[in-house]
Length: 166
Image 1 (tube, rainbow, N blue to C red):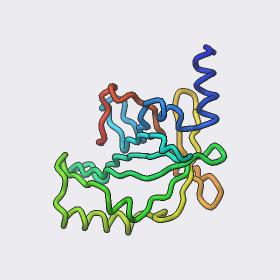
Image 2 (tube, rainbow, N blue to C red):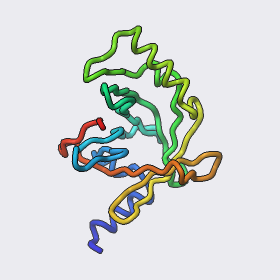
Image 3 (cartoon, rainbow, N blue to C red):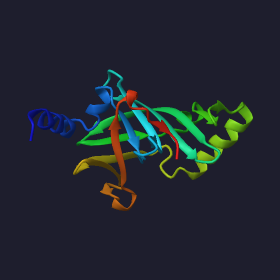
């Protein structure tokens, strides 16, 4: 195994979002053929032991509805943890086909997101593991990994041409 891969693997084990801090984006649910992701997350060091996670999430494929939001994340015991707060959703931008919704429609959509989000205002953690050339995230529910909700992801460069979509 080349030394560069070994160094990257060691850095990821110490901090699973190290690729994100180095400028990569986390593409959750990638479709390599269409160059789309169900969500794209970027990470920045907040300077206080936490990270700013900016997420663009596909809420609906047709018509395409996307939510853009920010939340704080941290790495604890090798897991990525975050609390999606009601205030984070309230501050989100909701767009339909690339155009931001008006305030009334956005407020309605945000209310529906809050109704359907089981981990709202609760800390949720995930493990990031590499399986061959693929990466997967597995949520940790009540201290136990929930393999039934494991999702594939990949680290991409902003120049790779990926976008949020079906």
